[in-house]
Amino acid sequence: MTEFADAARAAAQALRELFPPTPLQRNAFLSERYGAEIWLKREDLSPVRSYKIRGAFNAMRKRLSSEAGEVRFVCASAGNHAQGMAFACAHFGVKGTVFMPVTTPAQKIDKTRVFGGDNVEIRLVGDFFDQTLAAARAYCTEAGAQFLPPFDDLHVIEGQASVAVEMLQQLGGPPDILVLPVGGGGLSAGMTRYLSAVRAHCEVVLVEPVGGPSLTAALKAGAPVEVPITDTFVDGAAVARIGDLTFAALKGTDPGQVFLAPENRICVTIQEMLNHEGIVLEPAGALSLDVLPEIADRIRGKRVVCVTSGGNFDFERLPEVKERAMRYQGLKKYFILRLPQRPGALREFLELLGPDDDIARFEYLKKSARNFGSVLIGIETKDAATFPRLFERIAERGFAFRDITEDELLAEFLI
Image 1 (cartoon, helix red, strand yellow):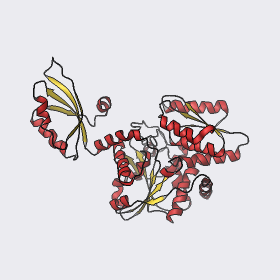
Image 2: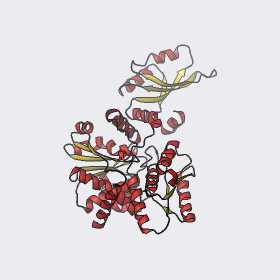
Image 3: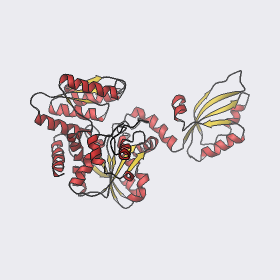
Image 4: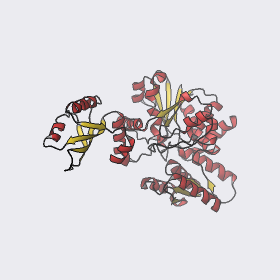
Protein backbone atom coordinates (compact mmCIF):
# COMPACT_ATOMS: atom_id res chain seq x y z
CA MET A 1 0.00 0.00 0.00
CA THR A 2 2.84 2.39 0.83
CA GLU A 3 4.34 1.63 -2.59
CA PHE A 4 1.07 2.60 -4.29
CA ALA A 5 0.82 5.82 -2.28
CA ASP A 6 4.39 6.75 -3.22
CA ALA A 7 3.63 6.03 -6.90
CA ALA A 8 0.49 8.19 -6.79
CA ARG A 9 2.40 11.08 -5.20
CA ALA A 10 5.15 10.73 -7.80
CA ALA A 11 2.52 10.83 -10.56
CA ALA A 12 1.01 13.99 -9.06
CA GLN A 13 4.42 15.65 -8.91
CA ALA A 14 5.28 14.64 -12.49
CA LEU A 15 1.97 16.04 -13.74
CA ARG A 16 3.10 19.51 -12.68
CA GLU A 17 5.10 19.52 -15.92
CA LEU A 18 1.76 19.71 -17.73
CA PHE A 19 -0.65 21.66 -15.50
CA PRO A 20 -1.17 22.87 -11.91
CA PRO A 21 -3.55 20.97 -9.60
CA THR A 22 -7.13 21.22 -10.79
CA PRO A 23 -9.19 23.53 -8.54
CA LEU A 24 -11.07 22.31 -5.49
CA GLN A 25 -13.93 24.80 -5.19
CA ARG A 26 -16.62 25.21 -2.57
CA ASN A 27 -19.94 25.49 -4.38
CA ALA A 28 -22.32 27.88 -2.63
CA PHE A 29 -25.34 26.94 -4.77
CA LEU A 30 -25.18 23.22 -3.89
CA SER A 31 -24.05 23.84 -0.31
CA GLU A 32 -27.09 25.99 0.40
CA ARG A 33 -29.46 23.59 -1.34
CA TYR A 34 -28.35 20.54 0.67
CA GLY A 35 -27.32 22.17 3.94
CA ALA A 36 -23.80 20.83 3.55
CA GLU A 37 -20.30 22.02 2.72
CA ILE A 38 -19.99 20.81 -0.86
CA TRP A 39 -16.72 21.06 -2.74
CA LEU A 40 -16.15 20.27 -6.41
CA LYS A 41 -12.87 18.76 -7.58
CA ARG A 42 -12.86 20.30 -11.04
CA GLU A 43 -11.33 17.67 -13.33
CA ASP A 44 -13.34 19.31 -16.10
CA LEU A 45 -10.72 22.10 -15.94
CA SER A 46 -7.70 19.97 -16.85
CA PRO A 47 -5.98 20.77 -20.18
CA VAL A 48 -8.13 18.13 -21.94
CA ARG A 49 -11.21 18.85 -19.76
CA SER A 50 -11.13 15.46 -18.02
CA TYR A 51 -9.06 13.46 -15.55
CA LYS A 52 -8.07 10.98 -18.28
CA ILE A 53 -4.90 12.91 -19.04
CA ARG A 54 -3.53 11.79 -15.66
CA GLY A 55 -3.58 8.06 -16.29
CA ALA A 56 -2.44 8.35 -19.89
CA PHE A 57 0.47 10.60 -18.91
CA ASN A 58 1.58 8.41 -16.01
CA ALA A 59 1.41 5.16 -17.96
CA MET A 60 3.35 6.72 -20.83
CA ARG A 61 5.93 8.17 -18.43
CA LYS A 62 6.49 4.80 -16.75
CA ARG A 63 6.81 2.88 -20.00
CA LEU A 64 9.17 5.36 -21.58
CA SER A 65 11.44 5.10 -18.55
CA SER A 66 11.61 1.32 -18.85
CA GLU A 67 11.68 0.90 -22.65
CA ALA A 68 14.80 1.26 -24.76
CA GLY A 69 14.47 2.72 -28.24
CA GLU A 70 11.50 4.25 -30.01
CA VAL A 71 8.04 3.48 -28.65
CA ARG A 72 4.71 3.95 -30.42
CA PHE A 73 1.59 4.13 -28.24
CA VAL A 74 -1.86 2.98 -29.33
CA CYS A 75 -5.32 3.44 -27.85
CA ALA A 76 -8.90 2.79 -28.85
CA SER A 77 -11.21 5.58 -27.74
CA ALA A 78 -13.79 8.00 -29.06
CA GLY A 79 -13.46 10.46 -26.22
CA ASN A 80 -11.46 11.62 -23.23
CA HIS A 81 -8.87 8.82 -23.16
CA ALA A 82 -7.94 9.54 -26.79
CA GLN A 83 -7.45 13.22 -26.02
CA GLY A 84 -5.41 12.46 -22.90
CA MET A 85 -3.10 10.11 -24.81
CA ALA A 86 -2.74 12.59 -27.68
CA PHE A 87 -1.76 15.37 -25.25
CA ALA A 88 0.79 13.11 -23.56
CA CYS A 89 2.27 12.03 -26.92
CA ALA A 90 2.83 15.66 -27.87
CA HIS A 91 4.38 16.38 -24.47
CA PHE A 92 6.84 13.49 -24.61
CA GLY A 93 7.49 13.87 -28.33
CA VAL A 94 6.53 10.26 -29.11
CA LYS A 95 4.33 8.82 -31.81
CA GLY A 96 0.83 7.55 -31.14
CA THR A 97 -2.02 6.01 -33.09
CA VAL A 98 -5.59 6.59 -31.95
CA PHE A 99 -8.25 4.21 -33.23
CA MET A 100 -11.78 5.66 -33.25
CA PRO A 101 -15.10 4.31 -34.54
CA VAL A 102 -16.15 5.64 -37.94
CA THR A 103 -19.21 7.12 -36.22
CA THR A 104 -17.14 9.36 -33.90
CA PRO A 105 -18.35 12.99 -34.06
CA ALA A 106 -16.02 15.29 -36.00
CA GLN A 107 -15.61 17.53 -32.94
CA LYS A 108 -13.93 14.73 -30.95
CA ILE A 109 -11.69 13.78 -33.86
CA ASP A 110 -10.63 17.39 -34.35
CA LYS A 111 -9.87 17.91 -30.64
CA THR A 112 -7.74 14.77 -30.52
CA ARG A 113 -5.85 15.93 -33.60
CA VAL A 114 -5.27 19.38 -32.07
CA PHE A 115 -3.88 17.92 -28.82
CA GLY A 116 -1.63 15.40 -30.57
CA GLY A 117 -0.51 17.45 -33.56
CA ASP A 118 2.00 15.72 -35.82
CA ASN A 119 2.73 13.13 -33.13
CA VAL A 120 -0.63 11.40 -33.45
CA GLU A 121 -2.24 9.49 -36.29
CA ILE A 122 -6.01 8.94 -36.16
CA ARG A 123 -7.54 5.86 -37.73
CA LEU A 124 -11.30 5.50 -38.11
CA VAL A 125 -12.20 1.81 -37.99
CA GLY A 126 -15.49 0.02 -37.33
CA ASP A 127 -19.05 1.10 -36.65
CA PHE A 128 -18.95 -0.21 -33.07
CA PHE A 129 -16.31 0.17 -30.38
CA ASP A 130 -15.62 -3.58 -30.14
CA GLN A 131 -14.52 -3.50 -33.78
CA THR A 132 -12.34 -0.46 -33.11
CA LEU A 133 -10.72 -2.10 -30.10
CA ALA A 134 -10.01 -5.30 -32.04
CA ALA A 135 -8.35 -3.28 -34.82
CA ALA A 136 -6.21 -1.39 -32.30
CA ARG A 137 -5.00 -4.58 -30.62
CA ALA A 138 -4.28 -6.22 -33.98
CA TYR A 139 -2.21 -3.19 -34.98
CA CYS A 140 -0.22 -3.41 -31.74
CA THR A 141 0.67 -7.03 -32.53
CA GLU A 142 1.66 -6.22 -36.10
CA ALA A 143 3.64 -3.04 -35.36
CA GLY A 144 5.04 -3.98 -31.96
CA ALA A 145 3.36 -0.93 -30.44
CA GLN A 146 2.37 -0.34 -26.82
CA PHE A 147 -1.36 -0.49 -26.11
CA LEU A 148 -2.51 2.11 -23.58
CA PRO A 149 -5.65 0.88 -21.78
CA PRO A 150 -8.21 3.48 -20.67
CA PHE A 151 -8.55 2.15 -17.10
CA ASP A 152 -7.44 -1.45 -16.47
CA ASP A 153 -3.74 -0.77 -16.01
CA LEU A 154 -1.75 -0.26 -12.80
CA HIS A 155 0.07 2.82 -14.06
CA VAL A 156 -3.17 4.35 -15.33
CA ILE A 157 -4.77 3.72 -11.93
CA GLU A 158 -1.77 5.35 -10.20
CA GLY A 159 -2.20 8.38 -12.43
CA GLN A 160 -5.89 8.71 -11.60
CA ALA A 161 -5.03 8.40 -7.90
CA SER A 162 -3.24 11.76 -8.21
CA VAL A 163 -6.70 13.36 -7.95
CA ALA A 164 -6.86 12.10 -4.35
CA VAL A 165 -3.32 13.34 -3.66
CA GLU A 166 -4.30 16.84 -4.71
CA MET A 167 -7.66 16.74 -2.93
CA LEU A 168 -6.13 15.91 0.46
CA GLN A 169 -3.51 18.64 0.06
CA GLN A 170 -6.08 21.23 -0.99
CA LEU A 171 -8.65 20.34 1.67
CA GLY A 172 -6.13 19.78 4.46
CA GLY A 173 -7.47 16.28 5.10
CA PRO A 174 -10.19 13.90 3.96
CA PRO A 175 -13.79 15.03 3.53
CA ASP A 176 -16.60 13.37 5.43
CA ILE A 177 -18.01 12.01 2.17
CA LEU A 178 -16.39 11.58 -1.24
CA VAL A 179 -18.66 11.11 -4.28
CA LEU A 180 -17.11 9.51 -7.36
CA PRO A 181 -18.38 8.49 -10.80
CA VAL A 182 -17.71 4.95 -12.00
CA GLY A 183 -17.23 3.73 -15.56
CA GLY A 184 -14.35 1.33 -16.06
CA GLY A 185 -13.27 2.03 -12.48
CA GLY A 186 -9.88 3.70 -12.99
CA LEU A 187 -10.67 6.90 -11.10
CA SER A 188 -12.60 5.27 -8.26
CA ALA A 189 -10.03 2.47 -7.85
CA GLY A 190 -7.13 4.90 -7.83
CA MET A 191 -8.65 7.37 -5.39
CA THR A 192 -9.98 4.78 -2.94
CA ARG A 193 -6.69 2.85 -2.96
CA TYR A 194 -4.75 6.01 -2.19
CA LEU A 195 -7.08 7.06 0.62
CA SER A 196 -6.78 3.61 2.14
CA ALA A 197 -2.99 3.59 1.75
CA VAL A 198 -2.58 6.88 3.63
CA ARG A 199 -5.36 6.04 6.10
CA ALA A 200 -7.46 9.03 5.14
CA HIS A 201 -10.82 7.68 6.24
CA CYS A 202 -14.04 8.94 4.69
CA GLU A 203 -17.32 7.56 3.39
CA VAL A 204 -17.17 6.89 -0.34
CA VAL A 205 -20.28 7.03 -2.52
CA LEU A 206 -20.00 5.65 -6.06
CA VAL A 207 -22.33 6.51 -8.94
CA GLU A 208 -22.77 4.80 -12.30
CA PRO A 209 -25.35 5.26 -15.06
CA VAL A 210 -28.46 3.09 -15.18
CA GLY A 211 -27.62 2.24 -18.78
CA GLY A 212 -24.26 0.66 -17.91
CA PRO A 213 -24.12 -0.65 -14.32
CA SER A 214 -20.89 -2.64 -14.63
CA LEU A 215 -19.79 -2.25 -10.97
CA THR A 216 -23.22 -3.12 -9.61
CA ALA A 217 -23.27 -6.28 -11.72
CA ALA A 218 -19.71 -7.21 -10.72
CA LEU A 219 -20.44 -6.81 -7.00
CA LYS A 220 -23.49 -9.03 -7.37
CA ALA A 221 -21.58 -11.69 -9.30
CA GLY A 222 -18.40 -11.42 -7.24
CA ALA A 223 -16.33 -10.82 -10.38
CA PRO A 224 -16.37 -8.59 -13.46
CA VAL A 225 -19.14 -9.55 -15.87
CA GLU A 226 -20.35 -8.03 -19.10
CA VAL A 227 -23.60 -6.09 -18.95
CA PRO A 228 -25.71 -4.89 -21.86
CA ILE A 229 -25.45 -1.15 -22.48
CA THR A 230 -29.06 -0.03 -22.62
CA ASP A 231 -28.35 3.69 -22.95
CA THR A 232 -25.18 5.27 -24.37
CA PHE A 233 -26.00 8.83 -23.31
CA VAL A 234 -23.37 8.77 -20.53
CA ASP A 235 -20.73 7.73 -23.03
CA GLY A 236 -17.84 8.49 -20.68
CA ALA A 237 -19.04 5.96 -18.08
CA ALA A 238 -21.33 3.49 -19.89
CA VAL A 239 -18.85 0.60 -19.79
CA ALA A 240 -19.98 -2.98 -20.46
CA ARG A 241 -17.39 -4.58 -18.17
CA ILE A 242 -15.47 -3.09 -15.29
CA GLY A 243 -11.72 -3.79 -15.35
CA ASP A 244 -10.14 -6.73 -13.53
CA LEU A 245 -7.56 -4.57 -11.76
CA THR A 246 -10.05 -1.84 -10.95
CA PHE A 247 -12.57 -4.33 -9.56
CA ALA A 248 -9.86 -5.86 -7.37
CA ALA A 249 -9.64 -2.46 -5.67
CA LEU A 250 -13.43 -2.02 -5.46
CA LYS A 251 -14.67 -5.54 -4.70
CA GLY A 252 -15.00 -4.80 -0.99
CA THR A 253 -17.45 -1.96 -1.66
CA ASP A 254 -20.79 -2.16 0.13
CA PRO A 255 -23.41 -2.41 -2.65
CA GLY A 256 -25.47 0.08 -0.66
CA GLN A 257 -22.81 2.69 -1.41
CA VAL A 258 -23.25 2.31 -5.18
CA PHE A 259 -26.03 4.35 -6.77
CA LEU A 260 -27.50 4.23 -10.27
CA ALA A 261 -28.21 7.55 -11.97
CA PRO A 262 -31.04 7.68 -14.55
CA GLU A 263 -29.87 9.26 -17.78
CA ASN A 264 -32.83 11.64 -18.01
CA ARG A 265 -32.20 12.89 -14.46
CA ILE A 266 -28.55 13.52 -15.36
CA CYS A 267 -29.86 15.88 -18.04
CA VAL A 268 -31.60 17.92 -15.33
CA THR A 269 -28.28 18.13 -13.45
CA ILE A 270 -26.37 19.22 -16.56
CA GLN A 271 -28.92 21.96 -17.21
CA GLU A 272 -28.89 23.18 -13.61
CA MET A 273 -25.12 23.45 -13.41
CA LEU A 274 -24.99 25.25 -16.75
CA ASN A 275 -27.82 27.67 -15.99
CA HIS A 276 -27.07 28.37 -12.31
CA GLU A 277 -23.28 28.09 -12.18
CA GLY A 278 -22.06 28.40 -15.75
CA ILE A 279 -20.31 25.05 -15.35
CA VAL A 280 -20.25 22.89 -18.48
CA LEU A 281 -20.28 19.17 -17.65
CA GLU A 282 -20.46 16.15 -19.88
CA PRO A 283 -22.92 13.43 -18.77
CA ALA A 284 -20.24 11.38 -16.97
CA GLY A 285 -18.91 14.56 -15.39
CA ALA A 286 -22.31 15.24 -13.82
CA LEU A 287 -22.72 11.81 -12.20
CA SER A 288 -21.30 12.78 -8.80
CA LEU A 289 -23.66 15.77 -8.55
CA ASP A 290 -26.69 13.94 -9.89
CA VAL A 291 -26.81 11.56 -6.91
CA LEU A 292 -26.95 14.35 -4.30
CA PRO A 293 -30.77 14.37 -4.03
CA GLU A 294 -30.70 10.66 -3.17
CA ILE A 295 -28.16 11.11 -0.37
CA ALA A 296 -29.43 14.48 0.86
CA ASP A 297 -30.15 13.21 4.38
CA ARG A 298 -26.74 11.64 4.92
CA ILE A 299 -24.75 14.64 3.62
CA ARG A 300 -26.57 17.32 5.62
CA GLY A 301 -24.05 19.16 7.82
CA LYS A 302 -21.13 17.22 6.30
CA ARG A 303 -18.10 18.20 4.26
CA VAL A 304 -18.55 16.59 0.83
CA VAL A 305 -16.27 16.42 -2.19
CA CYS A 306 -17.77 15.60 -5.59
CA VAL A 307 -15.39 14.89 -8.49
CA THR A 308 -16.67 16.50 -11.68
CA SER A 309 -14.78 14.17 -13.95
CA GLY A 310 -15.18 15.80 -17.35
CA GLY A 311 -16.50 18.76 -19.30
CA ASN A 312 -16.22 17.64 -22.93
CA PHE A 313 -19.80 18.43 -23.82
CA ASP A 314 -20.90 18.86 -27.41
CA PHE A 315 -23.38 21.73 -27.43
CA GLU A 316 -25.15 20.15 -30.39
CA ARG A 317 -26.53 17.77 -27.75
CA LEU A 318 -28.28 20.56 -25.83
CA PRO A 319 -31.67 19.96 -27.51
CA GLU A 320 -31.46 16.29 -26.47
CA VAL A 321 -30.50 17.27 -22.93
CA LYS A 322 -33.44 19.67 -22.69
CA GLU A 323 -35.82 17.08 -24.12
CA ARG A 324 -34.73 14.35 -21.72
CA ALA A 325 -34.70 16.71 -18.74
CA MET A 326 -38.26 17.87 -19.41
CA ARG A 327 -39.45 14.29 -19.78
CA TYR A 328 -37.84 13.36 -16.45
CA GLN A 329 -39.44 16.34 -14.71
CA GLY A 330 -42.83 15.50 -16.18
CA LEU A 331 -42.94 18.77 -18.13
CA LYS A 332 -43.21 17.17 -21.56
CA LYS A 333 -45.44 14.38 -22.79
CA TYR A 334 -46.02 12.63 -26.07
CA PHE A 335 -49.24 10.84 -26.83
CA ILE A 336 -51.19 9.44 -29.75
CA LEU A 337 -54.72 10.77 -30.07
CA ARG A 338 -57.53 9.10 -32.03
CA LEU A 339 -59.30 12.08 -33.54
CA PRO A 340 -62.73 11.72 -35.18
CA GLN A 341 -62.57 12.72 -38.83
CA ARG A 342 -65.32 15.30 -38.66
CA PRO A 343 -65.34 19.11 -38.92
CA GLY A 344 -64.57 20.82 -35.61
CA ALA A 345 -62.98 17.82 -33.87
CA LEU A 346 -59.53 19.38 -33.81
CA ARG A 347 -60.91 22.65 -32.46
CA GLU A 348 -62.64 20.74 -29.64
CA PHE A 349 -59.36 19.17 -28.69
CA LEU A 350 -57.44 22.45 -28.76
CA GLU A 351 -60.01 24.02 -26.44
CA LEU A 352 -59.03 21.44 -23.79
CA LEU A 353 -55.48 22.79 -23.52
CA GLY A 354 -54.55 25.12 -20.68
CA PRO A 355 -52.88 28.55 -20.96
CA ASP A 356 -49.41 27.09 -20.23
CA ASP A 357 -49.73 24.08 -22.54
CA ASP A 358 -47.55 24.46 -25.60
CA ILE A 359 -47.83 22.12 -28.59
CA ALA A 360 -44.26 21.17 -29.51
CA ARG A 361 -45.11 18.38 -31.96
CA PHE A 362 -48.18 17.77 -34.09
CA GLU A 363 -48.48 15.21 -36.87
CA TYR A 364 -51.89 14.29 -38.30
CA LEU A 365 -52.62 11.98 -41.20
CA LYS A 366 -56.17 12.20 -42.47
CA LYS A 367 -57.35 8.98 -44.13
CA SER A 368 -60.58 9.30 -46.12
CA ALA A 369 -61.61 5.67 -45.69
CA ARG A 370 -61.58 5.77 -41.90
CA ASN A 371 -63.72 7.40 -39.23
CA PHE A 372 -60.73 8.27 -37.03
CA GLY A 373 -57.24 9.61 -37.70
CA SER A 374 -54.15 9.20 -35.53
CA VAL A 375 -52.38 12.28 -34.25
CA LEU A 376 -48.91 12.32 -32.69
CA ILE A 377 -48.81 15.19 -30.19
CA GLY A 378 -46.01 16.54 -28.02
CA ILE A 379 -46.96 19.02 -25.30
CA GLU A 380 -44.69 21.08 -23.04
CA THR A 381 -45.95 22.78 -19.90
CA LYS A 382 -44.65 24.64 -16.83
CA ASP A 383 -46.16 22.40 -14.15
CA ALA A 384 -46.12 18.60 -14.18
CA ALA A 385 -49.51 18.58 -12.41
CA THR A 386 -51.01 19.95 -15.63
CA PHE A 387 -50.98 16.61 -17.42
CA PRO A 388 -53.24 14.51 -15.15
CA ARG A 389 -55.88 17.26 -15.37
CA LEU A 390 -55.45 17.56 -19.15
CA PHE A 391 -55.79 13.81 -19.63
CA GLU A 392 -58.96 13.83 -17.51
CA ARG A 393 -60.48 16.53 -19.72
CA ILE A 394 -59.54 14.63 -22.88
CA ALA A 395 -61.12 11.43 -21.56
CA GLU A 396 -64.27 13.25 -20.42
CA ARG A 397 -64.68 14.68 -23.93
CA GLY A 398 -64.58 11.12 -25.29
CA PHE A 399 -61.25 11.26 -27.14
CA ALA A 400 -59.19 8.07 -26.99
CA PHE A 401 -55.45 8.54 -26.47
CA ARG A 402 -52.29 6.69 -25.45
CA ASP A 403 -49.38 8.22 -23.54
CA ILE A 404 -46.16 7.02 -25.21
CA THR A 405 -43.67 9.19 -23.31
CA GLU A 406 -42.12 6.24 -21.47
CA ASP A 407 -42.52 3.74 -24.30
CA GLU A 408 -38.88 3.61 -25.38
CA LEU A 409 -39.51 1.66 -28.58
CA LEU A 410 -42.30 3.89 -29.86
CA ALA A 411 -40.64 7.08 -28.65
CA GLU A 412 -37.39 6.20 -30.44
CA PHE A 413 -39.24 5.46 -33.65
CA LEU A 414 -41.71 8.34 -33.66
CA ILE A 415 -40.03 11.18 -31.79
